[in-house]
Length: 75
Image 1 (cartoon, one colour):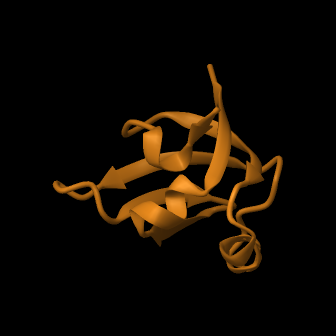
Image 2 (tube, one colour):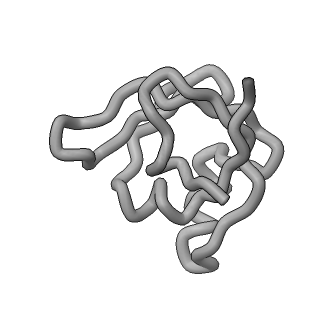
Image 3 (cartoon, one colour):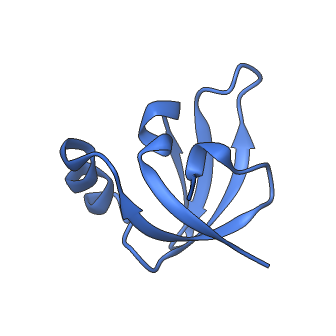
């Protein structure tokens, strides 16, 4: 399964689950809920941080945070 960190700029995906329990509650508080549609909008030149569009706003995440969010690509 892919993670948010694996997405390329402009790709859309649905959040499926998390693989880090410690980060999952923090990410859920920021709006990263299972079933929510996300789009990778920006990626820093060295890969960290990444910015995603979710629930009508842009959220920046560290690469390790993005890697803990498991997603499914949407066509």
